[in-house]
Image (cartoon, rainbow, N blue to C red; front, side):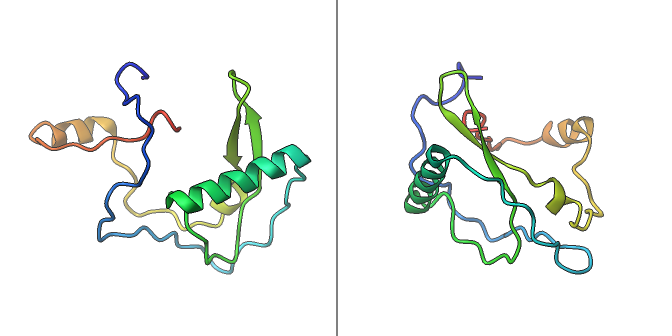
Length: 124
């Protein structure tokens, strides 16, 4: 997708809209999960990642009493990609009554649309 994506990295989030997403949990809160041990280099990288993204406004401090373990995966260019393991936390989330529609349904609806938004494929 790099041929169709902007070459300029975003320096801010898009404007905030009035709808915030809240994840509802089934029953009680999930138990505290295992924290993966990180090497000193990974710990430094994680601190730098959090600090940078807090400063840029891409993330904000969480008020959640639960969390998920993180780890890094080495990319082809030698850099590190942050991965968050949400598997255990996902098992406690209440399933949506209205799941994401099938792509054919979406294409039918979008057929008459004239304004579209995009997703960040370069940061995925």
